Length: 166
Image (cartoon, rainbow, N blue to C red; front, side, top):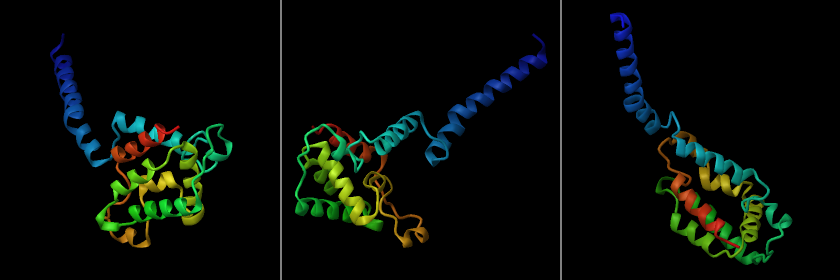
């Protein structure tokens, strides 16, 4: 092998190593690049949100053949208010314990859908998207360090609770 070719291969190997072991982890930590796990989660998230077979869809409870035991207006009003307040705490972050306990009170996926429809009608927000992004207020545009919305791990906990329902 010629000396030039050998030098080129060594430099190429070093460049690939630097990318995979230095540049790529930095890009993933700063959020400029998504990891394979984040890509998979994003696909699951999109299908959970947009699919009519998803319990987070406001139409699911109307179209589903699953049990249609609907919660009372008093209960759904309190649950929606609790979720909205838990996601609208600004610098305090989200109240994960309240969010999880609200979803644990439900017994059927149709109840999640009914709650999503009520939440959408009352607050003009999509429940799943609000869990993910939090409640965006006008002031949030001027306060960049405001933490709002559930993390991927926290959102997965909610999805697991909902998936375990009948």
